[in-house]
Every structure is written in C-alpha cells, then in structure tokens.
Amino acid sequence: MSATTIHPTAEISPEAQVGEGTQVWHHAQVREGARIGARCTLGKGVYIDRDVVVGDRCKIQNRASLFHGVRLADGVFVGPHAVFTNDRFPRAVNGDGTLKTEDDWEAGTIVVREGASIGAGAVILPNVTIGAWAVIAAGAVVTSDVRDHALVKGNPARFAGWGCSCGRPVTMSEAREWYCEHCRRAWRFGE
Image 1: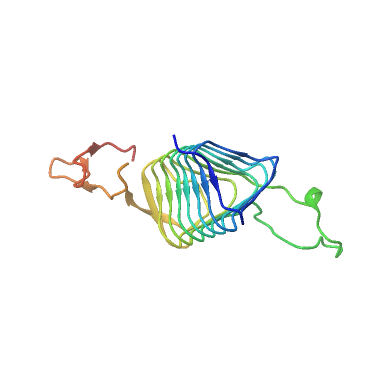
Image 2 (image 1 turned 180 degrees about the horizontal axis):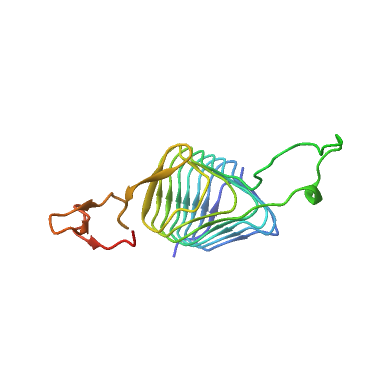
C-alpha cells in the first residue's frame, strides 16, 4: 500500500484520523474528530468538518464541503463543489437577535451508502440517506432519501432511472429485465 500523502498547505487537526495511503491535496482542511479511511483522495480545498466519517477508497473532489453529521461508506465518489449541509433552518441569530451558538441548533445527519456517486455541485440537505450505488446528478438538490441504485436529478431531486454498480444507467431489455449494456449485468430492483 502506498504511503499517506498530505500537502504542506493542508490543515489536518491532530485530533483527526487519516487512513493509510490517503492523499490530501492543497488547502484541504480536516477538522478534529474526523475519520478518513484508507486509500482516499481529498482534492484541493476540500472541507471535512468535525466528527465527519469517510470510509475507505472514497474520492472527494476539489472544493467539496462535508459538514458535521456526514457519514460516507466505502467507495463513495463526491464531485467538485458538492455540499453536504447539516441545518435545515439556518440562521445567524436567534429570534431575540442574540448570536446563535452550537446549543441553539440541531445538526442533522447524512448517510451515504457504499459505492454511491454525488455529482458536481450537488447539494445534499440533512436527514437523508443515499442508498448504495445510487447516482446523484450534477447540480441536484437532494431533500429526501434516495434508494439503492437510483439515479436522481433536478431541484428537488427526483427519480430518473436506475444505475448499475459500474456507474452507467440500466435499460429494460426485451425480456423485461433491467440490463446494463456496458457490463452486461442483469438487475432486479424493488419497484
């Protein structure tokens, strides 16, 4: 396994864990309590908030932001400028005008299952689960759970088809089976 590589401009909290063979590029920041798995890539300007968990073999592209409450399973792809939020009702101040503190809001969670792909510029709102091998299209705004292998797109994101674990869309064959023309795999989805 290759050695862990951390660019000198990256900021890694001494209270964070970075797995073996992981590469952290220019100006990335990994906050305290974050756990980054083995053989991951964190691109330029990636922000990993406190206590975020990233599984093994994940690829997080430039300028993606993963805020407190995010959990990525193994093999997840996150496109550039994707944002994982954690507050459905953000405000800088309380109703009485006092500055909000951590005690004044409730952080939501986002769980992304194995092999899922998040497109460039996607926004994932809190309190959702993205299923295994799901595909979130570029620019989509995810406001609710996404099923395993589902392809979603739009604002708000809506179901647009099924995807193969190779990343390509599947089509209905003449035999009325879901089929991937690229890897020749047949699929059965719980519709």
